[in-house]
Image (cartoon, rainbow, N blue to C red; front, side, top):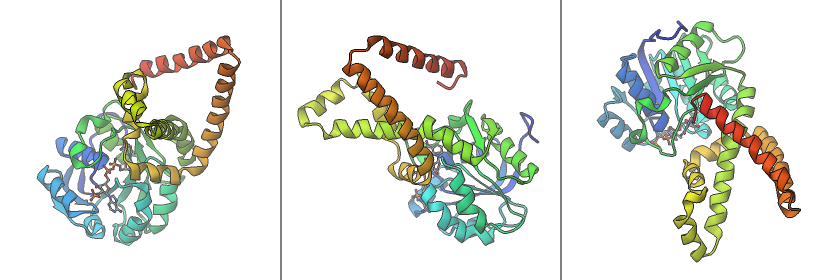
Length: 298
Ligand code: NAP
């Protein structure tokens, strides 16, 4: 099942949450005919109506428990803060043998918040497609979002290998490169590659916003000088990112500690006019960009 090109098929897929990520996956499932029936739940009827209009749902309900009934695959694509309450609602309604997976940006909390609610015989395979944009909602999604990007699965030890292979096949079908690691390792890696950069972007854009009016308009006018890239990241969904930081607190605080030490070293180098030190540091970081280009993740 795990080789490239093996196409998974589900009788009924239950999508809990149909925003940017959930709707992009729904589009892949539709495009490639991976399910006989897509059942969708969200928080508001408005979102369910849009999903129906876009042709992404065969049935919808605000009651997540109804949606998971009879599903062989359940995908959670909601902010991390909603996982616990949703899992307590759907848990006992998921049929034995079904797979429950998710797309959340932090992984240890999924095992802690969802695992205890699932009955014996239901397979939990947490996942994180490392792909996204700063946009939200079902209309923001597109099937090509995942193409060429990495998807990280973090099945707890002892997870049924066939369930892992099925989820692997699903994301491969979406065009992703699938890797498996422990949830703890995932959360440390993503703290530095994704969570800290977002925190820095939120900080720098916030600092600029606090500057007085005249400077603010100049900030926008001259934003191509580097600021613009931060504003794109800092436009990301506030609820999603609140939940990422609350759910990956330890790893983010560890990386933030290292970062502030390095920042203080740069501050000192600038104060003391240590040009060689600055140049050496900037030369080293340039290599990282080359590495990203080489693995086609730019
Ligand atoms: P989104 O576009 O804001 O969509 C969120 C969806 O969850 C909506 O359908 C929303 O329904 C539903 N929802 C929100 N709160 C809910 C609740 N309490 N109960 C039930 N449904 C609820 O979000 P997204 O960007 O797809 O993110 C979803 C997940 O993907 C998050 O866990 C995030 O960490 C992860 N992720 C995001 C990205 C990214 O770049 N955005 C990348 C990788 C992974 P309504 O519209 O009705 O409110």
